Image (cartoon, rainbow, N blue to C red; front, side, top):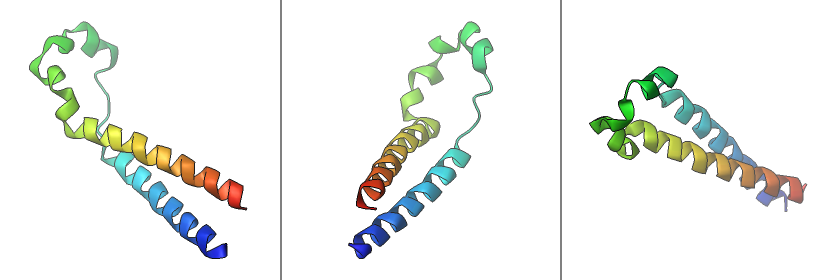
Length: 79
């Protein structure tokens, strides 16, 4: 029982560090509303936005965050 809690705690720590690193590697969204008004949505880069590094990092943030949440709930139930 204690070994399982220790393993989940270590995994949660690694997920927390991964979330921090992934968020730090993402670029800022400085375009804001002016980018939407300026017609950026019709550009070539906006059409291929799902393939960019920022999109992959955003997707990774969601998955690692969900894993962090599941590990937190598992620790809550086990303790």
